[in-house]
Length: 200
Image (cartoon, rainbow, N blue to C red; front, top):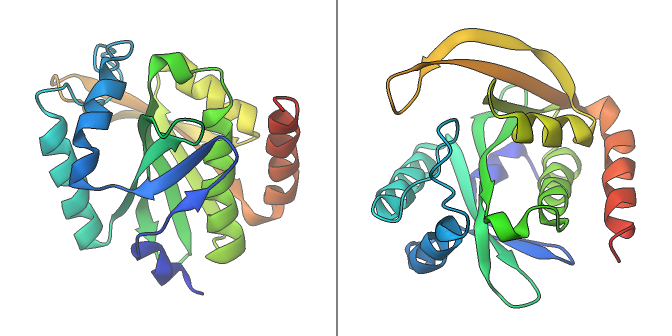
């Protein structure tokens, strides 16, 4: 399989969660997940409000059609509850490289192992099935929770892009860029698997 297959929706299944291709009928679940902790009320993230979630779903599906994004809905295996969303994005077929981004989970799922398992599923697919040379992560300079989570993966800090973009409120954003390259993946994978084994 080549990285071009990353443009084809698929389901990735783990012990705690499964990542399903984003669908319009996930709307109700995503709204409920966003309400858990008012996830949109963090100025440094891009979680949609309940009123704009449908628009965000349509935008992600449009980006999927363009080949720039492959969006997923994150579902807890134990009770089939929608807990959030994540994506492959900025897909570079020539490198090949993908970014894992636009990730959020309902507040009550934080610290339960669902996020590291999501990263394990996505990165395993990227490196071992698609043959990626690099998986990239980006986050807002002010999003310390996200930065800490990415660093715990074992990702390398590539740098900070200052005044990189304008956020939804019209403010300039500094973007922190991290990556894991193929030669680092075995150690990163071992670390993620160890963290998840401790939760059994």
